Amino acid sequence: MKRSKGIVVKTPEQLAGCRRAGQAAADVLRIVCGAVRPGMTTKELDDFAARTMADLGCRSADFGYCGYPAQTCISVNEAVIHGVPRESVTIREGDVVSVDITVECGGFVGDNARTVIVGEAPPEVRALVETTEKALAAGIAMARAGNRVGDISHAVEVVANAARLGIVHEYVGHGCGLDMHEEPEIPNWGPSHRGPPLQAGMVLCIEPMLTLGSRRIRVLEDDGWTVVTCDGKPAAHAEQMIAVTDGAPEILTPR
Ligand code: MF3
Ligand code: CO
Ligand code: CO
Image 1 (cartoon, helix red, strand yellow):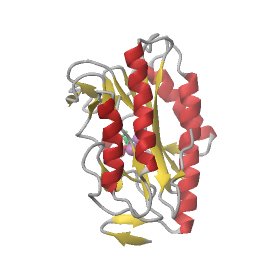
Image 2 (cartoon, rainbow, N blue to C red):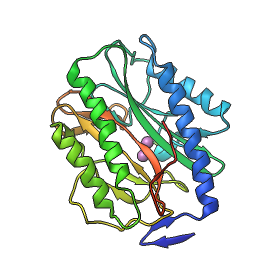
Image 3 (cartoon, rainbow, N blue to C red):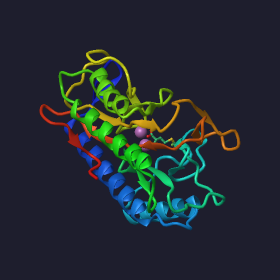
């Protein structure tokens, strides 16, 4: 494998592995999001995700990562990311549920996330979720050889700002594939034309985390993981893993 400033440029064989892991992560995400029902606890959803991963021949990359205690991250309403599934959190009608699935498959890692609304929600909440997907798409569109990481960041920021949403600054997208978190970091804001140049063969996770109120966040003390908004307003998170090519970005985690 070749490295440029710590950023892994994948070989064709490694890209094939990333593709399989990405597809598995996407399959698990689709199946788990499709299983979300009011009345379920986030722990039940986590158990279901673990069974789905086993059925598809992969396993959670989250479990045990820096001591992470669950198979997935499920972040409800004011939880932004890294929501630890629990028996005490029951999903209700109107909830905003972010599901983040990271799998290990054949020695490679696939990572993707989506936010679903359970039943009906007010227009501003629907706009939050839709804008987060739009911001992700705008970031992905900039993931082309010759552009820089800042072009992705800036494109995400423009979409979020236009919708007057908060952008979480403390957590970022990342390289992925051989490890869950590789260089470079991909912030969801910042100037274009800055940061590491993108090259064909880089595999990146782009993941806007947007809030309906203030962008300020904190980590819940009782589990040391769940990131919540300080003002208690809902947040949304969307993530896809892509490969930079000589042309359009290749989506490794198709929706
Ligand atoms: N899926 C997350 C990401 O998008 C990382 C999971 S953190 C863990 O980068 F602790 F749950 F593993
Ligand atoms: Co993720
Ligand atoms: Co990620």
